[in-house]
Amino acid sequence: MAEFLLEAKNVSVTFGSGSTKVEAVKNCSLTLRSGEPIGIVGESGSGKSTLARVLAGLQAPTEGEIFFNGEPVYKGSKSYTGEARRQVQMVFQDPYGSLNPQLTGLNAVAEAVRIHDKTNKDESENRALELLRRMGIAELDAIKKPRQLSGGQRQRVSVARALSANPTVLLADEPTSAIDQSAQAQLLNLFRGLLDDGLSIVLVSHDLGVIRYLTQRVYVMKDGVFVESGITEEIFNDPLEDYTKLLLASIPGDLGVAARRKLNKN
Ligand SMILES: Nc1ncnc2c1ncn2[C@@H]1O[C@H](COP(=O)(O)OP(=O)(O)OP(=O)(O)O)[C@@H](O)[C@H]1O
Ligand SMILES: [Mg+2]
Image (cartoon, rainbow, N blue to C red; front, side, top):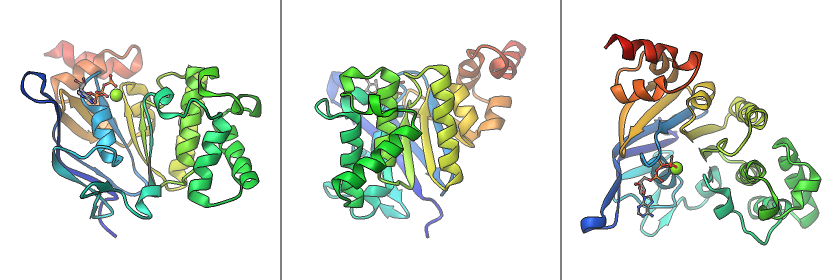
C-alpha cells in the first residue's frame, strides 16, 4: 500500500487565457493518509473548490498530478477507473446543482446505492432511507424533490448520496454552510463516527470552527496558494503567516483569541 491514500503533487489549475486568465490553483501539494481528516481553509475565491474538484477526478489539473493509492488518477481522458471510482466521493458546495431536480431525495440516494451495490429496488430504497435517516432526513422529506427541500436538507441528501457508495475518501466542499447550528453539530458528529469507522475526509470550509472540530491537519489557501499547513491545533494556537492570523482573528470568541493576541503583538 502506498504511503498516502491521496496525494496532490505540484497541482496548478488555470482557467481561460490572455486577459481572462485565472490561476485558480498554483503549485499546491497535499497528502492524505488513510483514516485521516484534513482541512482546506481560505477565503472566498481562494481556489478551494477547484482543488477539491481536481482531487475528486472531475477536472484534470493544468499542471501536476494526483495519485490515489500511489496510482495516477488521471489517465488520458479518464479518471478514477475501476474500484477507485467508488472509493472517492465528493459532496458538492452547491447541492442544488448536483442533485437531479426530477428525482426525490430517496430516489437520488437509492439510484446511487443501486449503481454501487447492484441491489434491487426495494433493497436500495431501504438502504437509502437508512442513510437519509442517519442524516436526519425523515421519510416525509425523503420523498421531496430538491426544490421542495430546505438548503440544509439538500446538503444532507447530498452527503447521504455520497455515502451510499461506501467510500474510502469523502471530499466535502462546505458541507455545513447552509445548515443551522444543531444540524451542523449532527452532521459533524456523523463525520466523526465515519472517521471512527476508518473513512478519510478532506473537508473544505471557510468555517474555522468546523475545521478545528474535525480535522487533524489543515492547509490554509490564499489566492490559489497554500500559504501555511500543519497540525490544526498548532496552527490555531500559533499561526505563523499573517494571512492565517487574520483569518483566525476574525473568528469571534475563544477560537480567535490566540490569533488576535499575536496580531496585536506585531
Ligand atoms: N470554471 C471556471 N472558469 C473560470 N474561472 C473559474 C472557474 N471556476 C472557478 N474559477 C475561478 O477560480 C477562482 C477560485 O474559485 P473556487 O471556486 O475554487 O474558490 P473557492 O475557494 O471555492 O471559493 P468559495 O469559498 O467562494 O467557494 C475564482 O477566482 C473563480 O472565479
Ligand atoms: Mg468553493
